Image 1: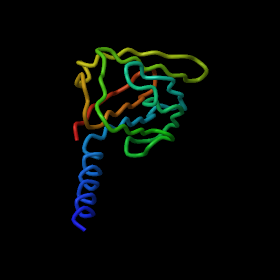
Image 2 (image 1 turned 120 degrees about the horizontal axis):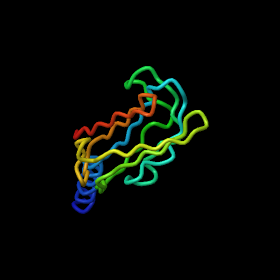
Image 3 (image 1 turned 90 degrees about the horizontal axis):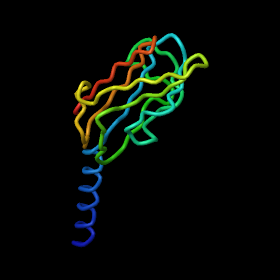
Length: 127
């Protein structure tokens, strides 16, 4: 019985720790057109959402707009967003320090908001 209780306590601790280091990559398309995000160079390949459909506000998720990772992620000095809109390819380089993103993320959220006209707003929330 003691061994069973100890194993249950260990599992609960592991589950609790599993969610403490959660990193969310959340995307919003506030522009007028559907876009396809090919990649965000500098982040893991699965962090790019693919297709984003326009939404009216950042409280309305776009299709396939969020991915979650458990564990630390190293962020290089420059992030490069590559996307397609209206049949044309677009590319934007952003400096990590200008965005307020640390070099290593252990938990939190990064919000990528496409504003249209080749403009993005990126925010890091450490929550």
